[in-house]
Length: 84
Image (cartoon, rainbow, N blue to C red; front, side):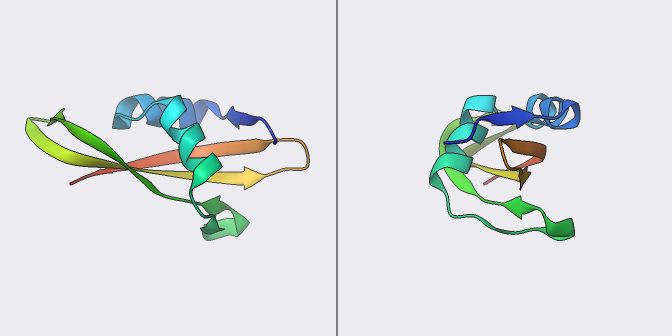
């Protein structure tokens, strides 16, 4: 299995949007991949959350990494997080 590397932008977005690198890794390793803009790939995974984010409590957090599969690694370009 290829190693997963995070761009500087992705590391900033993970922290600022409330995800963890572990959640992103798990999402990429276990969720089905689909196409994203610019020839990139994406996938999504829901995680139980049950905590407060920006003043509101949410039951679920969805992690959506955008990445490129390169010959020797997977490069995460950015990460989106949705709360519901």
